[in-house]
Image 1 (cartoon, rainbow, N blue to C red):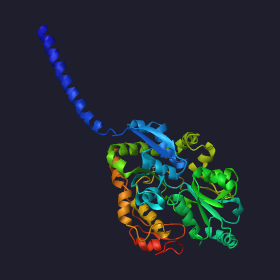
Image 2 (image 1 turned 30 degrees about the horizontal axis):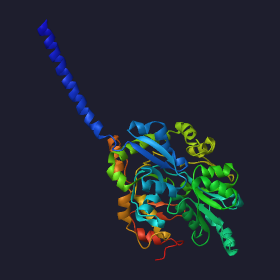
Image 3 (image 1 turned 60 degrees about the vertical axis):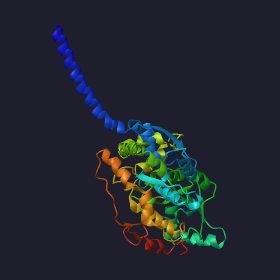
Length: 414
């Protein structure tokens, strides 16, 4: 009886040792994957394309990957930049041009290198005009030129707004005006206005047009103060838009945390691109602590129901998306295009180090590593040329300086 009991005990201990060893073996990779800094604060601006960060938080995707998220709304893009630079937030919803501007120290900002390992979305912005131009200006900005010239002759130039000088809305506004033969630096007044304040400023007559992300273009139509001339996807289908940004220094110290964040936002983005989820998504992001806009105003354009507000209504073939069509890959060509526009508009002096700057800011290496850990290996670099709505083609493998300085409407000095 005693021998049998001892034998059973030995067998039990042997099995337990095996199971414990296996448990430790499998626990090691899990431990290695734990983020260095689990408590992370995220910034965002009240725009529809903040949705992946909000959904990752609300749906528990951040928690799944070990991130304890705090979500902070910024009053303006300049405030978001300063919050990231100071360490008040560690990651943020950001305009693609901003990490480049901060890395270069443009626009009076101190030099603070930032990186882009993740593209948040494509499409989903627009140029809105005041009702004064309804029926007179449609999708062609050239139709604006006589009004611009008349106002300039009266020494009372038309006023247009964007959200941040080196940001996406600024470049779309500039590109739109220039495509109509209008120089945004000499022919009109160009203002910087935070996105949620666009409609209120147009309502009181402070601007004739603006470029901003949704839902504020749809809100202008709902409030009967303006209409959409073009969407930015009309100008460049599947164009780059917002990014998930980090300071270079923080990302280098916390590589596992960055990858954990990317994995969580990936899951949120896949969820968002199931159109069956967009009603719920809009219910969530419409809340006062997020966008603070009625759900139905946000939802229409998220579903591709595009009412321009001047009689044109279409099913948008390129609504805002967050994951499909290789959306999130930080394509170097997007950074190259942005630098050509900085050069075009005199925001940099002389030819910038196109390839060197882009290599530092755009970080597909981090993106690819995070995706590989999820078993996703089909996301690839795209260096194909792009033709925008004015018929001019951008070739990322071509002569970037010739492209940047070859536009008939520009502000560069040399």
